[in-house]
Length: 164
Image (cartoon, rainbow, N blue to C red; front, side, top):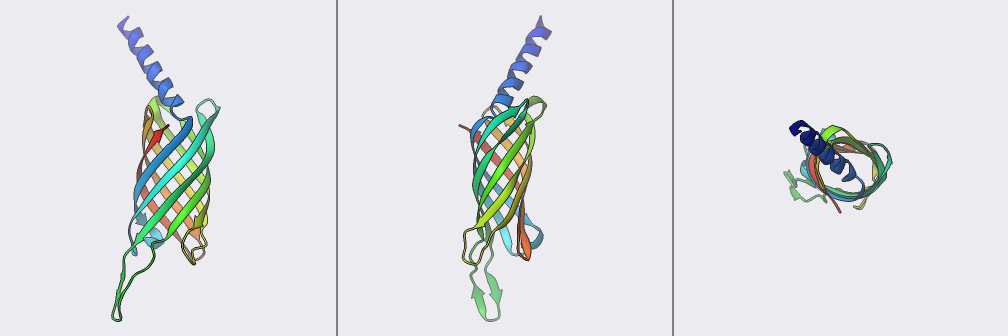
């Protein structure tokens, strides 16, 4: 009987975690810049809003929009300090997610990041991620990549999201 109750509890928790993927999701993340931008940027922040629907057993798809900003250090030269605008982007993407056993998931976002600064034309946006859902709250690790003309803006992120 004890074993049956445990199996029922784990099944119920797993089902709740899978259902928590559907619907409106709001997230925030902070990241460490890597690659081309690593020397110039201290950190990156982002926020996302997605609406996901179940299209198959444990597969969720939907649109996503967000905000990503890389904080740039001031340039210290012999001629003085120069302040550079922090590159900011508005990612517009399709998002997909596959739920795994016991709340684990992996997924990816693919789309275009619109540049929000003068001279920032934006570029191809991608964000693979892996995480764990605690019901309506999820924790994740992701890699944000924005490929622009002549380089890229990349960061390794730690994030949290909330199902509404």
